Every structure is written in structure tokens, then in C-alpha cells.
Image (cartoon, rainbow, N blue to C red; front, side, top):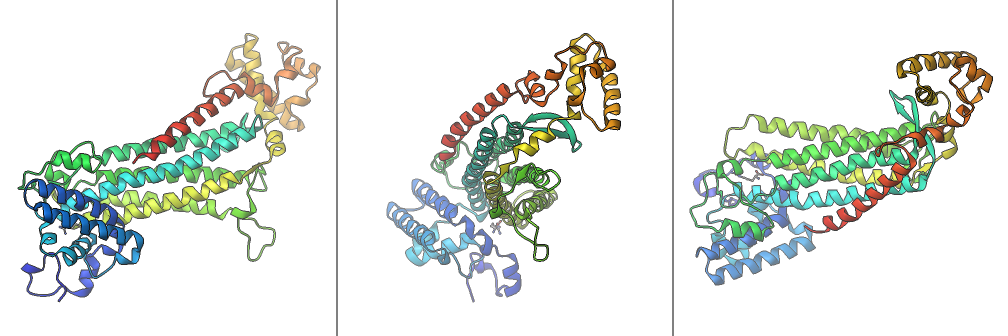
Length: 466
Ligand code: ARG
């Protein structure tokens, strides 16, 4: 009969299927590195309180380091009949050092151990996600820079609204990803509390220096309450929420690119290397990766909502339901990383078709500029709006636009239109007249781009630590 960490109390062996059902080793093996690092720190703490002698602690540490190395070199090493990664590491340790290995679990429970492992994991993996977000933001900044002064229409209700710079479009999407970056900083803060010393639920009976443990493991503080800490997975919910919003931003960017690269818009050309053909229709060039990202956003939103539902009815203290946190977290992480990488490649290889975007950026979408012109001559905006609305109606009937109006025709609509009207009503003039820092004014966009480039530099340095 296989021995489990808790076998002593049981007369019968576990049912094989039920044991497999409740075990987590197939997925929590991902916590291997964090589990060993946590145990290395715990061995030190036990030495400090005299549970392990200096020799025992030395033997345990050496064996744990060997185990860590072996697992890093050969992932197949991390396998076996064990219930979870904690049992696996303990078995390997006892195999190597016997008695001293059996003492390592003194004063510790898998409940505070898994809470620690997961916090360590989240703290290092959020960095990885942030680095991938930086890659994407930098590609968007490069696209903004190379679009230079090219114009395109901005849409509201997916109807042409006003002219803007193509750079403004790319920088708009960069903003969402910058917020995601900050959100992962917050996730790391939420995971920043060291739970060892909580034991199974009420704390540890050894005078463990938890502050020292915390700083050794890279935490700035210790959890406040053992009953809370062994069952708190709020940081997982925060992580999943940050992942879900990142996916939403990836999905919205994908949707824009899908639409703008369609035959109907023809604003962007997708690289052949990131598209797929049809088995039947020879002309097709489909944006599959972007569609998949849009689809996968639903999956990550589901992970987030699902985890909140798993937590909501739990009584206090550890409950096995909490084991469900891992698959949600790992799946969301994998999906965000893979989706960010795919979108980054698509964005990097995207070609802006400037002739198309510019021709779509002029025409009746200059109506706001005409109204503003009248306002600059003293007319109230509401009256100007009505007058220009009437002009648009006329122009639509005759299939013309503002740019084709002769001076006499302008004057027929209002005496206020002066000789400068024809040069004032262009897409370029429209963006030039924007005055605010967040606007599509070319100078403002240039500043926004410099700001993002500086932010990227700072964030790159910051993301290297930890
Ligand atoms: N695999 C478990 C989990 O992920 C580890 C903690 C087990 N604790 C227990 N009391 N059964 O939550």
C-alpha cells in the first residue's frame, strides 16, 4: 500500500479513482520550484528554533538544492504517485536524508505551505506577463512612430466621426496595456504577505521568526491572521481579473485590426505569416490568430468568474475547494502569455495602407470643423450644429462633400464663411486645431509617444527585478 503523508490514521487504502480525482500533482507540479524554495527557508527557520540541528538543516538544504537542480534539468523527474507537489518533494527529501527530512514538516501544514507556494508563483509570473506586455506596448509605439503624420478616421458607433492620426489609434491601445501592466503590479502587492507560521489554521507552536522568513522569501510583510491566511485566495482573484482585462484589451485591439484589415475598410494589411487560407475559397486570407484571441478572452473571463464562484460559499479555514485555484490561474496565465505573444507578432508585421486611411479621413466627417468655424465667427454652437446639419443633408442628396464646394456655394449657406474656409476644412487642419494634451493634435501625439517611450524604459528596468 502506497504511503501518504496522512496514512497513519487510515486502515484502508484510498480508492484509486477517488485518490486520483482529489490529487493535484498533475497540475501543481508547476509549483515545484516555489515549494522547494519555501522548504529551504523553512529548514533555516526550524534550525533557528532548534527543531533541526545545524547538521540536519545542512543535510536537508543540500538535498533540497539537489532536488531543485534535478527537477530543473529534467522536468520528467517531477512525477510519481504522489498526491501533490508537497508530498512529492517530501518523499524525495526523505529518500535522501531519512530522519531529518521527516522533521521538516514540523510546525508547518500543507495549508500554509500551498498558500506560500502560490504567492511566490504569482509574484514571479506577474513579472513575466508584464515583460510580455512591454513587448506589445513597444511594438504599438513603433507603429505609432512609423505612421508618422498619416491620417485615418476615428469612429464612434462604428461610423466615421472625426479625422485622427493613425499614431493616435496605436497609442490608444497602448494605454489599455499600460493599465494592465499597473494592474499586475497591484496583484503582486496583494500577494505580498508571507503565510508560513499559520500552520493548518491557528498558527504554529514554534517561535518561528516569521519576519526573517518573509524577508528571506522576498515579502515585505507577514500575514496578519492564520485563519484568514490559510484560506485567502483574493490575490488569485486579483490575478484572474487582471488577466481577464488584459484579454479584453487584446480582444478589442484584435477586433479593430480584423475590421480595419477587411476588404471593406482596407486600412491595414496583415502579414501573410500571421494569417491562414481557406480550404475551399482560394482568395481568403483570414485573421485566425486575432479571432482566437477574441475567443479566448471569453475563456479567461470565465476563469475569473468561475474562481469567484468557487470562493463565495466557503466556510472559514482551508477547504479543498481552494485547490481549484491552480488550474484557473495556470490556464489564465498560459492564455494571456500566448495571446499577447500572438498579438505582438501580428502588430509588428502589420502594414498601414496610408492612401486608404487618408481618403477615408476626409469628407463629411469634417462637419464638426465647419460648425467650429461658425462658432469662431460668433455663432452659438447649437445654431452652427443645425446649420451644418442642413448642409450635410444637401451634400448627401447631391453626393458631394465639403471640399467640392465653391466659395459662392459656401456663402449661400452662410455669410460667415470667409475666404479661408476652403483651407480650414481639411482633415489635416482638423487634427491641427485640436488643443488638448490628450488630443490627436500632431504635437500632442508626438509628446504622448515620447512619454510612452520613456515609460517603457523605466518599466523595462523595473521588470528586471524579481
Ligand atoms: N493540493 C492542496 C491544494 O492545492 C494542498 C493543500 C492540501 N491541504 C489539505 N489540508 N488537504 O490546496
